[in-house]
Image 1: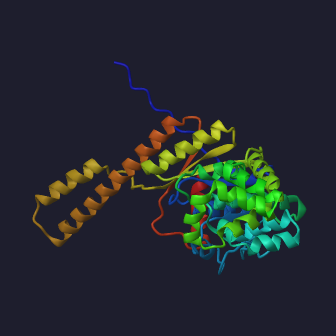
Image 2: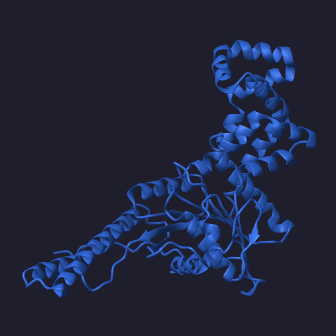
Image 3: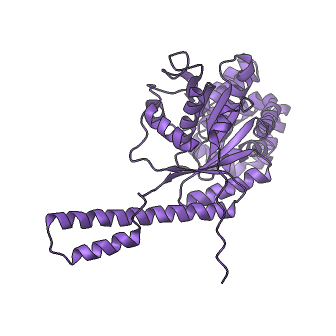
Length: 390
């Protein structure tokens, strides 16, 4: 009888080798929401800084827990130094942290691509104010814009040599990669072309075309948004028209930046079917687009002490139930029941990890056990970093 073939172990993801590589300039963590992506990004940044790198970590998560874990009172669109790292007393490295301010980043892009007078017109426009704060896909695109700005400052300012990006939490992990193309489709869309062409022709021509093409639409939108809707859209398009080419060009450049050899993607997932399904989509998309995928982090795996299987614990609990009920036997039975539940959870998580590894045998992975408490300080981030390094 032929022995069953042993399943090969998944490739080990050497995180420290990635962090120490002086040629590596950008690390992007991505995955679905709620899998510990922000904590992973912060732990990677801290570990790299304490190994001598000068790191800036960009988070998109508006929660205050990251700032608190880094010992900062707040995070905003400006990199802030984390105390105790580098020049503050811990080696040659340095760690700075920031949180994306979507509207401020959009404002910076506008200011950089037009005159101060036109920029003020755009900023004051209600249509732009709504667009920059809530337009679908704006957060993902502005995250890439900020990455582009930080990447340009690697050489110019010499303030950091590694950027760690925590991508936006979204319904689909693919939104981040699709943001530049989505912006390009928006700028090339039928409505924008229809609005732009009349704007170049002048006021009466503009009103004539818009009224003819959007009569019913404008009546409905005017009731919702007010009588100034058309005027705001007209002014916005007229002010921003000369910038459309710049937006499109920057979107393409940012997308190509993500494919550069000094960029690495790390996909973060938890042992949950939905999170792993999202991670599989992302892995396949990165491979399809020939983007540099360094590895996958399988986060928050439930573990149990070895030596006592769920089956043996169940059998022991059954034997205890046959004995005389005492406080000691009751406590032992409760402890065994907890162990059984933990062992079954750990078995489930390991099965999910093995299934993912079987589906992606060529992808390096690192498993990170679940911590007993939330990460709320540098010590917790160091613990995560040690687990990431294996």
